[in-house]
Length: 131
Ligand code: THU
Image 1: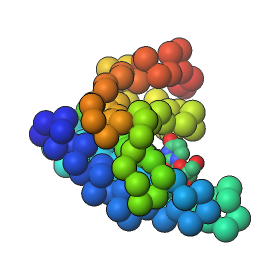
Image 2: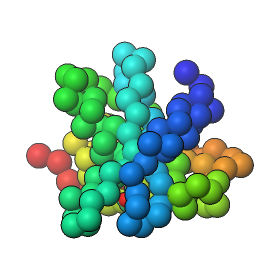
Image 3: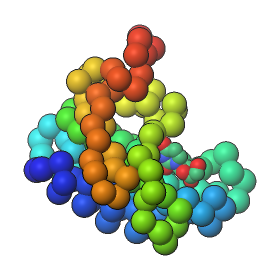
Protein backbone atom coordinates (compact mmCIF):
# COMPACT_ATOMS: atom_id res chain seq x y z
CA UNK A 1 0.00 0.00 0.00
CA UNK A 2 1.37 3.42 -0.93
CA UNK A 3 1.80 6.26 1.57
CA UNK A 4 -0.90 8.21 -0.24
CA UNK A 5 -3.37 5.30 -0.09
CA UNK A 6 -2.77 4.96 3.67
CA UNK A 7 -3.27 8.71 4.10
CA UNK A 8 -6.51 8.54 2.11
CA UNK A 9 -7.73 5.97 4.67
CA UNK A 10 -6.75 8.33 7.51
CA UNK A 11 -8.96 11.00 5.91
CA UNK A 12 -11.78 8.42 5.74
CA UNK A 13 -11.27 7.54 9.43
CA UNK A 14 -11.39 11.23 10.33
CA UNK A 15 -14.98 11.43 9.04
CA UNK A 16 -16.09 9.36 12.07
CA UNK A 17 -14.37 11.66 14.59
CA UNK A 18 -16.52 12.33 17.66
CA UNK A 19 -15.19 15.72 18.70
CA UNK A 20 -18.04 18.00 19.84
CA UNK A 21 -15.93 19.58 22.61
CA UNK A 22 -12.65 20.53 20.94
CA UNK A 23 -14.01 20.78 17.40
CA UNK A 24 -10.74 19.16 16.31
CA UNK A 25 -11.15 16.03 14.19
CA UNK A 26 -8.38 13.45 13.88
CA UNK A 27 -8.18 10.28 11.78
CA UNK A 28 -5.54 7.56 11.74
CA UNK A 29 -4.86 4.55 9.54
CA UNK A 30 -2.51 1.96 11.04
CA UNK A 31 -0.86 -0.51 8.67
CA UNK A 32 -0.03 -3.87 10.25
CA UNK A 33 2.84 -6.06 9.08
CA UNK A 34 0.31 -8.55 7.68
CA UNK A 35 -1.18 -5.84 5.42
CA UNK A 36 -4.33 -5.23 7.43
CA UNK A 37 -5.30 -1.60 8.10
CA UNK A 38 -6.94 -0.47 11.36
CA UNK A 39 -8.76 2.86 11.29
CA UNK A 40 -9.17 5.12 14.31
CA UNK A 41 -10.67 8.50 15.15
CA UNK A 42 -10.64 10.64 18.27
CA UNK A 43 -13.52 9.92 20.62
CA UNK A 44 -14.24 12.71 23.10
CA UNK A 45 -16.26 12.77 26.30
CA UNK A 46 -18.21 15.38 28.29
CA UNK A 47 -15.92 14.59 31.20
CA UNK A 48 -12.92 15.35 28.93
CA UNK A 49 -10.29 13.03 30.43
CA UNK A 50 -11.81 9.80 29.03
CA UNK A 51 -11.11 11.13 25.52
CA UNK A 52 -9.19 8.72 23.32
CA UNK A 53 -6.94 9.97 20.53
CA UNK A 54 -7.30 8.65 16.98
CA UNK A 55 -3.94 6.87 17.04
CA UNK A 56 -4.70 5.00 20.24
CA UNK A 57 -8.15 4.03 18.96
CA UNK A 58 -6.44 2.45 15.93
CA UNK A 59 -3.77 0.71 18.04
CA UNK A 60 -6.25 -0.64 20.58
CA UNK A 61 -8.51 -1.96 17.83
CA UNK A 62 -5.54 -3.85 16.36
CA UNK A 63 -4.21 -5.15 19.68
CA UNK A 64 -7.68 -6.33 20.67
CA UNK A 65 -7.79 -8.33 17.40
CA UNK A 66 -4.50 -10.02 18.30
CA UNK A 67 -2.36 -7.97 15.90
CA UNK A 68 0.93 -6.81 17.43
CA UNK A 69 3.23 -6.02 14.51
CA UNK A 70 3.04 -2.74 12.62
CA UNK A 71 4.90 -0.87 9.91
CA UNK A 72 3.31 2.57 9.43
CA UNK A 73 0.59 4.95 10.61
CA UNK A 74 -0.94 7.86 8.70
CA UNK A 75 -2.54 10.63 10.77
CA UNK A 76 -4.52 13.71 9.79
CA UNK A 77 -6.00 16.35 12.06
CA UNK A 78 -7.61 19.75 11.84
CA UNK A 79 -10.71 21.72 12.70
CA UNK A 80 -13.86 19.64 12.20
CA UNK A 81 -15.39 20.10 8.76
CA UNK A 82 -12.27 21.84 7.43
CA UNK A 83 -9.24 20.70 5.50
CA UNK A 84 -6.03 20.33 7.58
CA UNK A 85 -3.92 23.48 7.62
CA UNK A 86 -0.73 22.23 9.22
CA UNK A 87 1.23 19.05 9.78
CA UNK A 88 -0.26 17.06 12.64
CA UNK A 89 2.06 15.76 15.37
CA UNK A 90 0.93 12.96 17.67
CA UNK A 91 0.65 13.67 21.40
CA UNK A 92 3.13 12.27 23.91
CA UNK A 93 0.75 9.63 25.22
CA UNK A 94 0.19 8.23 21.72
CA UNK A 95 3.95 8.23 21.08
CA UNK A 96 4.40 6.14 24.21
CA UNK A 97 1.70 3.68 23.06
CA UNK A 98 3.54 3.39 19.73
CA UNK A 99 6.74 2.71 21.71
CA UNK A 100 5.05 -0.24 23.40
CA UNK A 101 4.36 -2.06 20.14
CA UNK A 102 6.74 -0.62 17.53
CA UNK A 103 10.45 -0.42 16.85
CA UNK A 104 12.48 2.76 16.22
CA UNK A 105 11.94 2.51 12.45
CA UNK A 106 8.12 2.54 12.69
CA UNK A 107 6.95 5.25 10.27
CA UNK A 108 4.60 8.12 11.12
CA UNK A 109 3.09 9.81 8.12
CA UNK A 110 1.41 13.22 8.35
CA UNK A 111 0.05 15.82 5.95
CA UNK A 112 -0.82 19.49 5.81
CA UNK A 113 -3.39 18.67 3.14
CA UNK A 114 -0.88 19.28 0.36
CA UNK A 115 2.30 17.35 1.08
CA UNK A 116 3.14 14.19 2.96
CA UNK A 117 5.86 14.22 5.60
CA UNK A 118 7.33 11.12 7.25
CA UNK A 119 9.01 10.68 10.63
CA UNK A 120 10.24 7.57 12.40
CA UNK A 121 9.23 6.79 15.95
CA UNK A 122 12.87 7.40 16.96
CA UNK A 123 12.56 10.94 15.52
CA UNK A 124 9.48 11.71 17.64
CA UNK A 125 10.33 9.75 20.79
CA UNK A 126 14.08 9.45 21.23
CA UNK A 127 15.19 7.32 24.16
CA UNK A 128 11.59 6.30 24.83
CA UNK A 129 10.81 4.28 27.95
CA UNK A 130 10.41 0.53 27.61
CA UNK A 131 10.62 -2.39 30.05
N1 THU B 1 -5.98 14.17 19.50
C1 THU B 1 -5.76 13.03 18.80
O1 THU B 1 -6.68 12.38 18.33
N2 THU B 1 -4.46 12.63 18.64
C2 THU B 1 -3.37 13.26 19.16
O2 THU B 1 -2.25 12.77 19.04
C3 THU B 1 -3.54 14.57 19.83
C4 THU B 1 -4.93 15.00 20.08
C5 THU B 1 -7.36 14.60 19.73
C6 THU B 1 -7.80 14.54 21.17
C7 THU B 1 -8.92 15.57 21.19
O3 THU B 1 -10.12 14.93 20.83
C8 THU B 1 -8.54 16.57 20.11
O4 THU B 1 -7.53 15.95 19.33
C9 THU B 1 -8.02 17.90 20.65
O5 THU B 1 -6.99 17.68 21.54
